[in-house]
Image 1 (tube, rainbow, N blue to C red):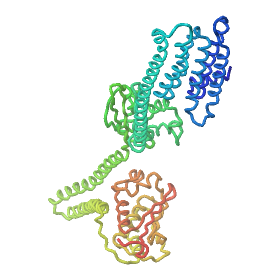
Image 2: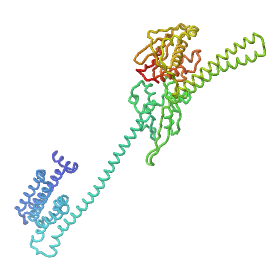
Image 3: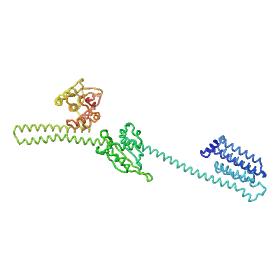
Image 4: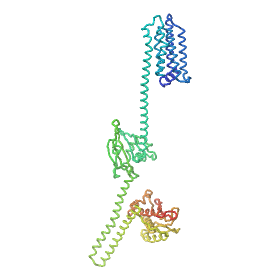
Length: 576
């Protein structure tokens, strides 16, 4: 039973040609053989030729064996022609042996007819008509006692005509099926091309989404995330990673739904960086509520840590009336821009304060001097002289600030002029240190020179003097009373130069990278009473860069700082 069931499955479900051929032939052989045997047994008194039935059964057996071993034929069309013709012969013998009761067996002729027509189309139809005329029609015309008349001829020709009609119907259906199959194949090819184009477009869009630095998150009508690019994950979910403790792969650490919920709970602040945004009013929550907004600035992350400044936009999108509306939320990292804006505000505030102080002093002492002019006494003249001294000192301070700003602008615009000459570095160091000893003594700082080498520099001596003076003055200002500032001559692979070493409080690691940024002042500098606008180190770096040299900083809080300046020699470097 299992074997029969498997053959039936292969023939009718899987479409196996051999299995279908076996089923077709076995069914025909059983039906014809059983019908002829029953007629012979039930009508023993009729004219039944047992020899014809046996011959027909033998032909059916041969045809069935041919179907079973059809793959043995070297040419596939041979069994499709021979087996139906054997069936016709078997049917003709059985029908002749059981005639007239066996006339009903004529209907079985359509089984080999269908086989021939489906295999050979028009030629199969012609072969079928010829086989009917040869095997079945003579029996209808000449067997029996009745004479051949017009009525008997008409009855005998009904079956050939029916075979012609059935063959035409089969050919027509097959033609229509072929045409439909061609259309379906063409439609399938178009669908396959569309699918390939869609897959290519999808890959391109996802690749584009993954490569841009603008975060994109798409929400469906229910507020569920259907797409999210890596930039969006970096912008908002990075804060979730810090919150969940999964620094490396936050998107994998939290399930998608939980991630959306966690993003809503991240610390968010308004554009002022102070006003907290509650989770119920976060950008994602508002977008899910259907709100639309553009370029809203928020700060993400704890106030005491590293924050991201994001410009967030939420827009509606509906590509087609049949597609439900979606919401697209985009985020753009504007941290650098906002930090520059904040830095500019700090710079304006600092410069305004630093310029206002000497200007106020100048104006005040000038007014006092004018008041003393009316009194011609020696005491008044002495007071005026002291007032003008203060005015001169503050004027010099203003001039120094303005010159620093102008020099910084020159270095940034590459309009820095150098007068290159070769000179000894050690005498220049001794001269600068000698001029600053009194300043260092006033601050309680010890100055020292360690000239283990006598390097020669090819550079602008006045600019190198300016670099050294700035670095030593900074060391005096910020190392603190009781500490030491040392200038050492050094030569290495980068060139010749000097190190300015102090054993003061050091510089926080977070500030080291910003030391040479114009107008930057560290926390210690801002907290101190030392005046300045943060241009000294920026100017120093500009001068060193103009010489093709290098300036580096190594510092640790509580262990002092080392500023190293190296100017390449003419052999090792390029003269500016």
